[in-house]
Length: 305
Image (cartoon, rainbow, N blue to C red; front, side, top):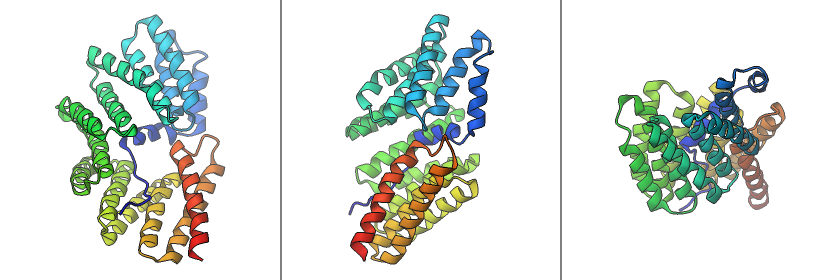
């Protein structure tokens, strides 16, 4: 049985590091453009581009293009690769998968040329997600494994966790739930050792999805609840919608419709709260949640009365 569940991709978690920053921090970065030394301007443009990725992909693209043009002028390969990757990410986030591919491939080429292991990992991760998004799961698996084969240093543990998490998501998509969950538990151990609370929450949500798909609703509920508590502790309103929606799906699948409605209502209320609380928020992920949860809530009211 298939469920309308929200799964979290590890490459999106990295976007949130910037998305969770305040508008004041963004304003400060933009103001610095007026007096930053020329040799630092390119990196600052890339940083601003990264900040905008989840909230405004088009603006992110525009800043990345400025960084790209300046990097070419300054012959700064690392900054050029970062700009290419940000342009690819921004297009990807807008659903423009084919146009994003040349940017991702160029970023990977530059990363390999200069030996930037972090950029190599992110580029392989993006490339594999591209293949997943166009439905080529075998190529996605191959690309994730290729990226993992290059990460051999103990310092690569976070990059390994990112790629393994998304590799597990491909197994979820292909119905290999137990294989996915084995990998998720490996990733969870890394994040717990590093104390990465938001990452821990996202992986616990994804582990819960594995249990949910296997119809082990008790274990799924436990892990969804654990993810929800962490997001609440972090004060991340839009992220709370993800496990709340999935908990609602458990109650709906268990035919406990009153409880399902209650959780769908909570989703809708949190999304409205997130939209009204910040000019830069909510994140792009929350935009899809708003539409999906609102629609589910409306349909639930119509079909469960």
